[in-house]
Image (tube, rainbow, N blue to C red; front, top):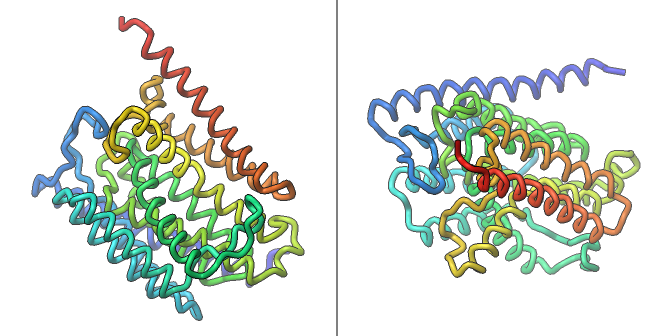
Length: 365
């Protein structure tokens, strides 16, 4: 039965989404105007930047503005970790702007990412505390959790940055991840924190309006680093909250903290899978793992003849399927659950690779 309290919170969260979307969309519109007048473009190349015209890449500024302003109004009471999350977000925001405008040296950008990750992991104490039985590993020491979470967060920031290669893809996946995390925060009994996750949904949707194919603007590192960082930290935070609110396991959606851990892992899985696969492939060919090429999954889809919108839809459905597997396999050994995710991703990759190979082998008429 829907009560007044339920209606209040529905309106509360919808307000967060709509407000952040409107602020973000307005900001992006102005950014497009300014960058075009000042001729601040993301110049196309023959490898990864495949658009046919000069398009600005500072759309992440709109995400940041929409997210930060809305968060100020929906500030979660009683959560001392939020200032550190926002401090890290500011570090990544300015790092992203500098990189989008000046092409920051990779070593300096990596250092900024590590510092931003460490600020939240250490001072906010948001860290991986246990593997909850995955590979037979349980609780881990605090120092190991800090190191692992900092490195993991930095890696995911870059993994998420890698998927920002075609129109609308990174925005669409960020909306999926943030929206699901907001619902999961609700599930573990927090009424204020979901508004922050939903604010990120709205802010990203505001950019997606201009970033969908054919894109008028890209999010750039300014947006992808902020989104990658926040999604990773919120995933770790969800598992920690679930572990400390064990009463939720009397319900049917999530059966245990081990299940919560695997669900959080499934949210992060496909960007990590694709990044690791590409790194291994580049190293096997004697190339730098950081050297840009067209071996990412979304480029395979384009090479197979799919449009930007079709490629985005396929990868979105693949992500939903992986997350669905984590929910369905809650009561099995977590190793089997993880292997099932790998098997699904491998089969998906194989099918796309075969389609790509057939397309490239077809004679051009």
